[in-house]
Length: 106
Image (cartoon, rainbow, N blue to C red; front, side, top):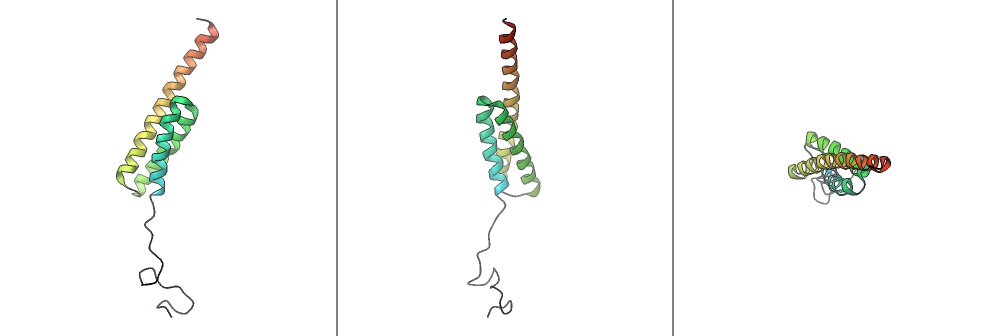
């Protein structure tokens, strides 16, 4: 029998019990990945880069406030996501200017 009573599994800190997990890195990793994807797609498909950058920035800020994940990974995700947003907006403006000039024939 375990120390938790009949029918219960052993506690996590006892031998033979489940392994304690160190979770919480998911948001930091997602922010970093979305920041990288956002930077790449900001140049190719600006709208995808913008959306990935916004989601990555939100996840990075939430991860930082909750203090989950490594500090460097969270900061990298926030910085890359912000760069993705700025690049996406710049390339959208450049695309709009090129489209206007093409339509006007200038």
